[in-house]
Image 1 (cartoon, rainbow, N blue to C red):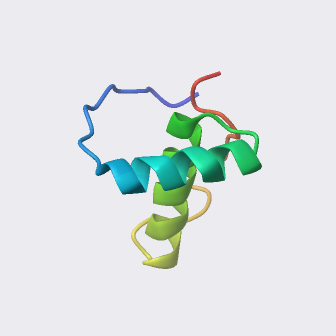
Image 2 (image 1 turned 60 degrees about the horizontal axis):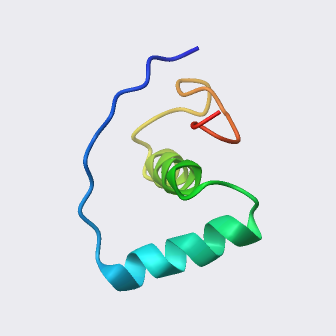
Length: 61
């Protein structure tokens, strides 16, 4: 399993509220949803390959 590092994140109230609603719809924690969205964006931008970052549903768990 990959090492996890804590990172403080400042985020607007509107973005956080949208992420909270989205994470509830996807049955994930907000932290897991943010990581999922970041991984997807990195893959789409060609910054990482799918196998480079292990797929997990909940980085909190």
